[in-house]
Length: 238
Image (cartoon, rainbow, N blue to C red; front, side, top):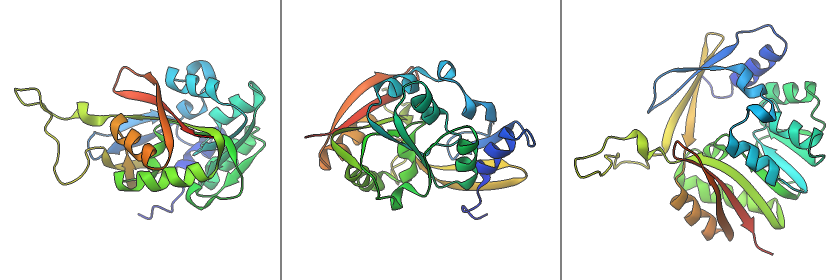
């Protein structure tokens, strides 16, 4: 089925309007099907993981929330922290939902095509780097995001090292595929009897640091989670 189908956006909009199912089914090429309650995408600050809470608290200045979805992160920054925040998402349904919830500034566009404004903070939360799909594309994504940052600006992102999903040898070494980077997955979503799949990336800290360094961004690891996840701050030097 075409990846142009706005399945996730439709799910968000239906849930907001109380006229659809209350969950979507997700899976990856490494994991089994997993139902996710749509209420998760409408959570309050207190319901967010600590990594996300920390990222929001570190946000400053003019903010771009990449892949804003239903707008929960942006709305906290707008309403509680009183920041100028723009939510960008290529999903019409997501943007309609964020607007309906009160987000003032939204951009219905792919981040890869956006060039109009300069920001002090760019958010890439909920494994935001995944949008580049492949490890080889990470450097290009960071180059583009850096072009949207003011000097001294920051990219706040979270991701996970998926090495823990692979079996170990008796010596403790992980058995990972040799054909591609182990964090490159196919991600699937099912909703309303329809399905989409797309490439998705989970990147470990060392590969992130290397890509960031190559494009002139300084990496600071702010937090590490309990499940091989982490929050990173990439800074564009003055």
